[in-house]
Image 1 (spheres, rainbow, N blue to C red):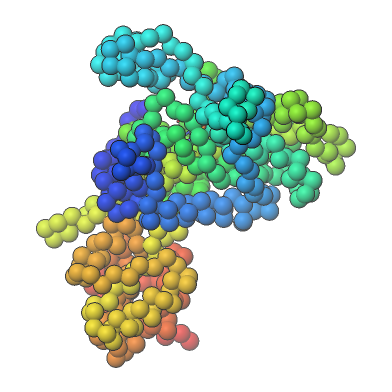
Image 2: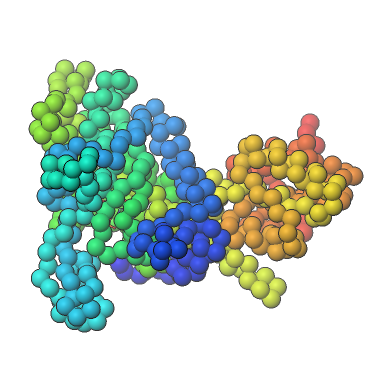
Length: 456
Ligand code: ATP
């Protein structure tokens, strides 16, 4: 990993914020933790769902050339023989003879332990798939694997999808789900863990059109991150060199992000040719070809595969959103998350706990939470409450005060600009909807009191 630019935030700050505010906890913490496994807390789970929803919306819902599936994690073991994972899904492993740390020898230069300088054992290939047994008898015949990628569940359903949806080439199948890899070296928080989630597409095209579609998907995938607010200068494309290409790949690019530890892979986009469908046809004995109406021939489609990690996307969105601003004598910490990704969209903050103010605030809370994730907070000063919401990325706060009881208006405050406006309660939902959809409804002079214009 080479550092060209300065990362936006350091990892310790982010890990501490995630833990303090309930985004992410170490797994099995009360038992001392389980290495490289993580639990998403109340805010983390909301944000993770938002990431997956945003992906599904753009990649599946808004396209007519894409369908989704959800295949099982445990699959027939012969799938991993056909895909090449049983033989080839391995990393080079060596152990330090002094400190007994294990290392992936393709991840550093030199021949000694990067930790203590000790001598290393000879490098051996280590298969990354987790094994378990199907049924009560633990014998070789019953071994099954936890999938190391979601892709193979798509390939083995290719014919089912063609038969049931009557999709014509080019079309894609998308899947979001858990994958498992017994990684040798983990770390960098949720960047590399042993259990993680992927968002994958297998996009089937006619051979000969694959290069064009490959370029199309590079752009489409990059656009997804840009649309959700990641800064352009923190993303780059890196083409794999010949020796890096996986056995099946004709071409491959990584989308890299400038993480706190440097540039690293966020998503991979590969041209897999017809490798997977041909292999599964050969190993299963079933035809996985496609009848092309135009040429009147059976063809084996080529495949373009964008493969993204939910957890790495989560980390990248958090890194990019993190900001610190001077705030009187203190520092305002905020997450400038895109409204689609923010775990909480709106916070209702009554300026008094008195019954009549609280009643209006609670009514608003009950109404708005039918549409969005909404928080209600009446503890401590309003300044502190704003800071609490800023730190978790809540785009809009609504305050209810004594004046609201008289004029039927509330104050809406924006996270990034800290601008505020008064909005009639009966216009509130429309204002919040427009604002969350990115409309610049009220860019205000600082401190300005602009009322939403009357319609008509
Ligand atoms: P790396 O080189 O970092 O090990 P990879 O090239 O093996 O990654 P792919 O097999 O291309 O990764 O997987 C596709 C995507 O799945 C990656 O871009 C990443 O976002 C995610 N991913 C892969 N392995 C992990 C992991 N151990 N933890 C979290 N996410 C992962």
